[in-house]
Image (cartoon, rainbow, N blue to C red):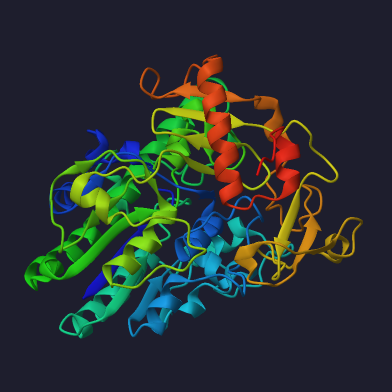
Length: 495
């Protein structure tokens, strides 16, 4: 038995032909849909990149207890569990967050890991000219790009090549898991010109959208147009190399005994709702409702679709189930194999969100976003044993600040007392807190996706809101949400 995960970053489902797009040139994603089961109601859980990867390992939510950060000592990790049960795991990735402090314990859980450098201002190529201080990603990106041409030097291509080396050397062997994880199509959209020319012959250098509201007037319209063209160009590049993997699976008859997962951590806004990117706006569908494809050779149903509600915490339990391994007690996701076989419902409701912002819930039709009622001091804490932000450790001001203490009683911590550290948008040294209080200005939001799939018109429906609130309270209890979270969003903690 073998399993392959092909993972992308920031893949917006609405730009894929499998979900109705007619502009992106992605013939191999169409092939993928013919080979796999396509999921229509698949959601992320914790946002953004590294929180999503923590739950990919653990099968449980990250965003209720801490911000961006590494795997914790008490976490159950999918590749570690596979290794303990005789399944070899290998990761090939160009996701630069893994070699920053806040992602530094993920790649070590694999049996082996090959890392490809250079994406998004990765501190890679040394050049001391015009240096004005650390954490200048745009400066570093300009230096790195010089080493990323021609196309075979692009990190995406080098990541693909690493994955292919593993497949070529191991396709006849048994009991392994390959995670082929690409940073693309995450910004910046640095891509060979041949892919851009599929969409335009004009110069277009707006390839790194800013995080926030789109500029007004003609400038904003131009930026949206250019960003979408560049995004589609990256999609066509990743489609090209996906096709080469599919060719290999075809040529070596691997579909008969190899599980395939194709997924992403979250989506991305390219002008929808008046925003670029993620993090600083409500959790709209473009960010949270993600593409997902799954092939299980023991179940089949190639080319079919499934509409059962499911999400990223279900991936680890699915892979363990495929290998016949029982999931740990604290892995709260559910295997997707019953969805594949029978389209069986495995969730009535799911949660998703960013640490410290709206707590969101959906039943597949309605999406309810509940904002903070009481914010500020005493309403938001990180619970951790490894206090690291994205680029730096928690500051000494955070660690010795008023309110820092030890907390016990979380069963998933397996008897360990956790550091309970106050979280503030003012204290993160590398701006990874995403302005925790800013979300309050949006208020609570309730959307009916059946009548308003683009989420343009929030509704008032007391009965639907009451039902979603009760379901949210239940899921918060099941996931051991900390007491102050209930206070923060104005809910009752009922046993």
